[in-house]
Length: 270
Image (cartoon, rainbow, N blue to C red; front, side, top):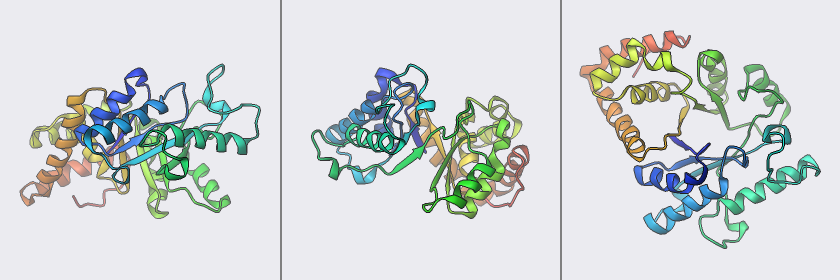
């Protein structure tokens, strides 16, 4: 599970530290001042290093580059908008490396980012990548994408075709808006049943079912320290519960209902 840092404002650094303390080791941010405070994510990482003894090699940190259209009209941007696209990318990445350094004054040659995502690559309101766009991209680039980050909800048919393509091509699918965009799924009978049977929160049951899909990671953007800890701990507890043969039959039914709901063929298994 990845901790998402969008829309955290001045609380970003503290929330990153709380997330690490709760057990998160993966963090998502972006070079987009309109919605992210990337520099405060870095500050939070440095707090984790100094206060909790975190090691950079044990963390996964991803950020994003956004073109001018994705930054928003009249918004602060992390590069000269009049420069070439190549220079915009270069400047943005250098700024991200500086922001996300695990130690103050560390040379940029010693700083690294685990993943760089091209965010909102098309000039439109939707920030999801379609199957056709992903296929076209893979056909025309030398370096294939390793991550696709899309909203997971009924409006995109839960990205069944995109996720299938990702599995076939070794691409990790990252799902965001899993709770906020899925109120009907969250209140569904099968999610409620799993939560009740396993003694977990419905949100945790939904996280589990989504992460149970092949090659999928979920973003979690809670601002409550107790929820951070609960989500991580209960997902692990739910995995232990699911591993018991005594729960295999009911879990298979719930999994089948979930896959049918999102339009995916049930392939069985737990």
